[in-house]
Length: 381
Image 1 (cartoon, rainbow, N blue to C red):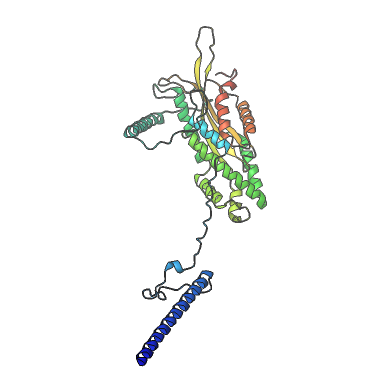
Image 2 (cartoon, rainbow, N blue to C red):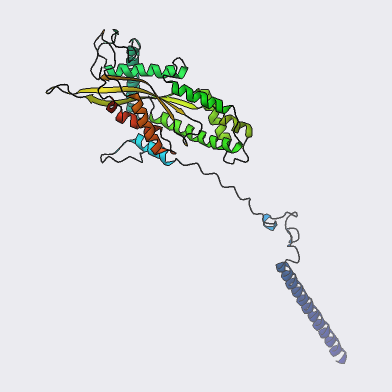
């Protein structure tokens, strides 16, 4: 019995000792894991990868890589807005509402319908037929009265005058017709003499800024006077000037010096406008009716290098005042009145001075059409 008791006591002691060792091992493991977790949270040890966590094949999760912030994108340059003068010209082109106010916003047309395409084609065909009829008409200068001219029967006199004006405008463009006044030639010679002395870079940059404004104004004029505008300067030269002006950028210090010199040395830009003014000739005697008149005027415009800081050079190349009655065959196409061209040019320059340094050519053209027939006085033919 004593031997059995001793064996039982020994086995119990061994079992108790084993349990105590297991509990101590488990406690030390938990303490080690807690310590390692604390070190990981503090960043003292790297996080285990997939392989250390019994993952597959030692692959690394993207979440374990260091975060790199994306590069900030540079803000795009905002497009330049229109100046106040250009917006006014656009509003004038839109027309006026019933209350006489300028229309500032017009709905954009989504597309042409089939009916609109057909109407536009019909108008173009009618215009071509009328141009073909007028091409066969022989005309005379405005001051040459007394020579018989064969005209297309039934065509109004003012339409024949406008056809003649278009021929003169294109003659100016091709250089077949010289300038009517010597003052314009003198201004061109003076500018050519000044161009031989190269200005300093600061003045060249100021001229380049003026050139940009001039090119924008020519684009506006061409859009507003679609049938009346003719570019007198070389189209290739103007396109070259536009490309150089765009290449200069906005920083004067970092611009191309050769391109800047070429822009500053470019000849003055010129254009012509075929304008129409309406009025009437007062009745000569009591009981007679007034005669409606139409003045067809060819205005030549030269933009100096520093325009719009300086006024433009204006010249009236040709004027013809006619009635609105159709001419019969073998009738004479002559002017019925002579305008005071010097007074008209003075009035236009006065309007330009009140508009500068904003673009003023549209205001000048408006002044001419409004006051042309007021400058007739008693100069009736």
